[in-house]
Structure formats: C-alpha cells, structure tokens
Image (cartoon, rainbow, N blue to C red; front, side):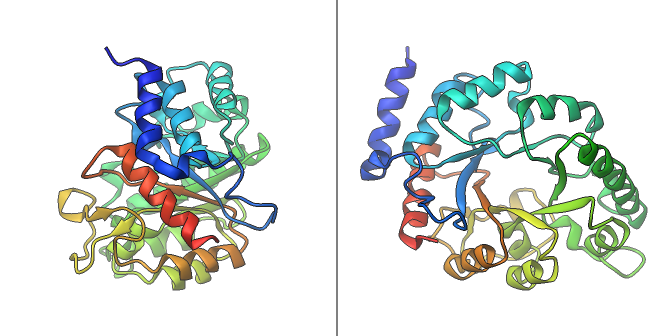
Length: 288
C-alpha cells in the first residue's frame, strides 16, 4: 500500500534538485514577478485520493500557487481552505462549472479566492452564435454578482471559441462584443490559442485590460491546428519541449501586469509529477 510519505518521497526524487527550493524562491522579492502555480485539473486523478499529499508535492516542486477545480469541491469550503493553507500554497483563483455557477459564489467567497473562473461552455452552446450570446449574458449577470461578493469573474478559453459561426464571425468575437469588460475578465490559455491558429501575443495585447490570469502548457512542433478539444487537438508537452515562445510571452504577460500563471498540461506521457517538475525547471531557467 502506498502511503502519503512514500508518495512525497517519490515525488521529491522525481523533482531532483528543484525540490530544495524554498516556497517563495521563484517569485523573488519583486512584487511585479509572475507567480507560478498549477491548475489542479492536471492532477485530477490523484487529488481525490490524497489531496493534502498532492498539494504538498506541488509545493515541494517549487510552485507557489494552486488553482482549484470542481473535482475537490466535495470538501466543505472551510475544510478545503485549511487543506490548501496547510500545504503552503497560495489560493487566488478557482474554476467553477457553467452549470450551477451562481450557486457556488458563496462557496468561493468562503474559500477566499479573488477570481471565480468559468472554464468551459456547455456543449450545446459551443456551435452557434445564440449559444455564445447566451454565455455573454450569463457572464455579465454572474460578473455583477461575483463583484458584489467581493471577487472578480473570469472566463477561460479553449479553441472552439475561435471557429467562425453562422453569422460570419467567431464565437470569441461574439463573447467579447456582448460581454461587459468591467465585469467579464479573462484567463487566457496560451496553448489553446495557438491550437486555434491565433497569435497569443496579439490576443494578449488586444484584450490587455481584461486578462488577469494565464494557463501554460507547450505544444508539439508541426501539430495541426483546429477547433476541437478532443484527441485530435491534444498535442501537449512539457514547457520548453514544444514550439511556443515562452520567454517572449511570459515577459509580455509580466509587462501587461498579469501576476498569476498556472501550469495546466491536461495529459502527460509519463508520471504527472515528473512532468510537472520538468516544466517548473524550465520556468526557473526562464526566470521571469
């Protein structure tokens, strides 16, 4: 039987010399630096079995933040907050499903997060202008309520939003035009922008005032672009092993005032903690 202690020891061996870094070493003393974390979706298979152990392993690798996902919301908010606090990780943002989003506002407030993020539209809203218009209306309403609760609302993109719809423009354009920029912020997933054939630097500049958070995972060179998130769109690899120009984009993010960047590699070819440690080692080398 694998104990929590065994799990942490194996993770420490996988992370190698990176493991010895103090918790806040990478963030440095410059308050303008990017703070690197992990979206817990990346460890969705491990977290429900030993959440405290998984969070501690992430902290030992060197990350300073965690972004939560519904897979761990079976814990009462106060209990979950304590587990995160005990891990030594910061908690600034969390994802909440589109369905029932409003019902989680009080839960998010109890967690103490600053950003409530909607990560995905329902399947029946992804393929029509009306679906994106409904999403924009919902986002405006939720954004107001989230603001009133002392937090901010954000939407996390994938690639399907950039497909041209029946009205001749993309779902993304509809979302951006129909949503209130003072209520609807963005968490940009750089990988999915590239997968959709977008230039992430241009998108970041265009929506500079809305972007508060970013997601990181690399993309294998030469992979075909597209608008689906299924296996045909999954060309994931560790940071620095793919084709995305991370030094340039991370520096741009820093200049634009973005302060939180989360590793979110949906699938890994090897053990997830080893993959995570490799990506952190790359970020440490980039040193932005």
